[in-house]
Length: 452
Image (cartoon, one colour):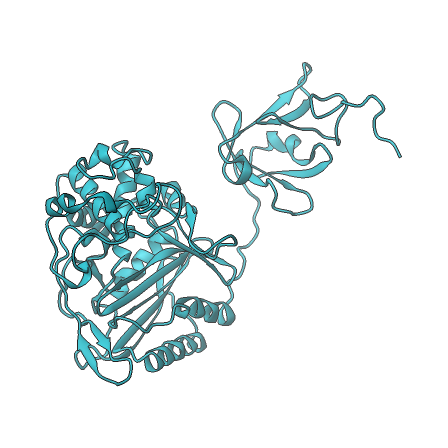
């Protein structure tokens, strides 16, 4: 463990102590992960008469979805599944076979939130064949791609996609391809001792009602798994970038990209591919929340800072939505991260002639050389409009990684004598002077030139 300072630990513990007492939670555990390691663990309340510890199991609900999504992305990277594939290609026989895998991962397929029948979270599950047979015209609630609409049913069908490709249950595939490689040996489909029992807390009296726990069968990929604070801390480290060869880092970054938002124009919450996203306290966090009868859990990770935070409780409701961001705020206040020491980078010095100011029309930009042969292009005034990083390609060009130029090609154009002429960025011409009259469009279109 890379522990936090004693003063930080005290502040973190007080915050969860207030949460457990004021929200009336039977037990509450929380943890902070930093640089891939558990940095702090705290617990309040009792589980069967004893204080919970890092090995106490809680149900994690929809955090299960992110682990299923990880296997789907592994299938994509293997070439077995394309994110633009229709569901019917892999799971035929449903009335929504036209929706794509990407839409299902991002909850934009327009599927109903819940399966037909009684509330699946509080009743015994049914086999997947029976579930698919029950699906009808009401399975689709919105035009595919139109909007964000969270769907537990969608992830049940993704679990079946995994099972059909792997020739084993979705849970066995998650165990073999995600949990075991990450060392999450205490994350299971059904509870094992010691585990917390789930309760509802009466809204007007300090009494408990035991909540049921069933095998959800077909719906299990939407929220079946149980885990421990120690295991969920390892998952937070994974989300923060410690992928341990489970996923290519670029694939995990793709999962963290916003595919849709769920709270309007200036988004603070959204969804990527199997991951919930939130912007809070200057951070951009990725993870997932989970709720099942008797349990709540959430895990967030900030890959930019290599920090993660989580909580687990055995109550149906009550935990504050802001608990984890407040724990991160405490960490920032008590132990602000020092910037990494600057050191010279290993770069291709033959590209130094490309660096410095360039102009797109009258707009001033700066081109910087990053590690190796990679480049960054950004407005000279620091504004974010059309800023991007570019990764070097084998053919001597550069490929845009983000923003307006994501996926676009940057080319260096030279004159016959080998000197620099301009940069061509998907028909946008960048020159060393504003509207260079010797350059192609947009330069030299008025013979009179600049005037006062």
